[in-house]
Length: 462
Image 1 (tube, helix red, strand yellow):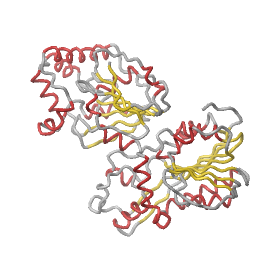
Image 2 (cartoon, one colour):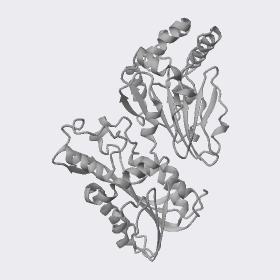
Image 3 (tube, helix red, strand yellow):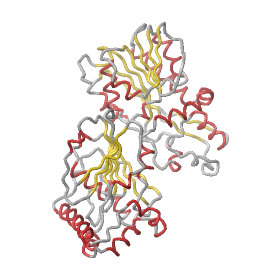
Image 4 (cartoon, one colour):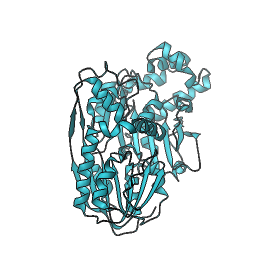
């Protein structure tokens, strides 16, 4: 197998790793760019071997595997080096009558491969000839005999490997995208395959076998600049329309009070926004020093004699902070945007003084589920037990409280105004949330979860 880096910066510790499908190369990801992330494409199934030393130095690795790349990734990547894995129109058993491509079809594709049949295959993985003509620049022509023979050999390699046993499947698969018009991997087989793993969410998308990978990546990974712009625009109107967020802020402050962190210490707030939660916890903590970190300008809040304001991506900022530097870390309705929540929580534990308290709220699966049909790549919310598992190595006295807040609206337009003025539309495209598209909707269900915990009295390495 081969790997090509499309974007590489020595300062980046995050990697978007794409496993291409058969006969596809780096060109399918040519427009994938994300601030703070390197981008690499693995391709070519001439063998199923890969030197994975390139993963050294990356704290966060997001895998996006397409088609046969799903199986190839499961065969070549160490699970402990992948933060989250996303499958796109592929399974861990690519040659399988029930969970992949039927064996006869797979063998027939290899046996009858020539330039003409390869062209027919590629048109079949698109919606038709017109889409193929528009996208053919993403694939090589493969017209010469040597290239055709090489592609045939790649299929034989995968076929023989599958005969020796299915993919390991140990990678942290989070979501499987299934194109409802896929004519390569049968849709019913994909659904059967991924139903075997209860931890994998399946999302059916309107697409053939070929999928715009960059669109899925943009839906999964929050772009800090776009998130900043969205909340900056909503800052003037946020407090007036943030009904559910205000309720959640009050409840999180109550949970913080119950955790008894004391008063007068050093407080770090992540994602303070307009200060909706800031004003609530200030009454509880009465901090002597406060540090506010957000991706857009905030404050001043005047809740402590000493205040510091930082405009930066909080995940990257906290990586550089000193150990044992804060008594309390708080964050309300923010960390769901983060790429690596487990590592962020670990860094929080490192930055807290022994016995320090963390109080955060985020959201659970089903949050704003009414909008899921309008969001091609819904945001990923971890379950409560998953959050607990991330906390347990570094914290004790863990308290997790689930909540449900239902907001009713008099009209679709009123709901649209709520989304616009709070900036919480998630991954829905700007043109997707319209009166006609949301016809009949009159409510939104928020599913916040409140977390408090105390850092263990131990050293945690950065």
